[in-house]
Length: 227
Image 1 (cartoon, one colour):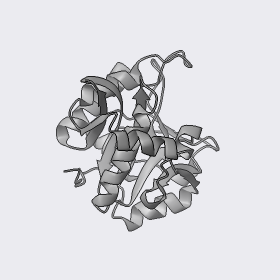
Image 2 (cartoon, helix red, strand yellow):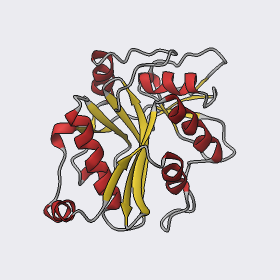
Image 3 (spheres, rainbow, N blue to C red):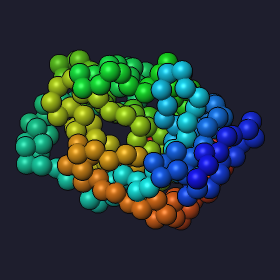
């Protein structure tokens, strides 16, 4: 199956035409119109430093149904004790930078300086958001992603203290559920996400949920409510 090369025209091929590994297209850029079109189409960027922009639509998709959030007994105790303070959109750039930092189990991350700048622009426009987890005034965990309509598309998370990223994730999921959001997209599966209640959803079902939720592909900014 071919990988599509994008022109400057704002348009993606149908996501179900992606390669078996989920790679859909090459090209375009990380400007707000391309990113907003991508997320509203069920597509996200993922590439390494020096590579062209690569766009992905994996099958299956890792998602959290907000009603399926799982909080283990040990994590519930952490939450009850109030070991961490949680904020929203207080330190977006710092969260993205921490997510981009090299990790002990990886040579590096895919979040390049170009990516940091691109999501910074989306944050300034009100579409990208962060959740911060603090301990004694120090940023020790968090996550960021893109909010469109009733969907939150998670991008990355980090922690420097055990449970900090889980606390941020739980706070986000509860925040979204209270405000009538439909789904938290986690993109790719990990044991960490599964432990919090995420599961794999067939891509066709995921795309249909986007369509039913008013997420028809568009290159125009879509309204998001994260207040």
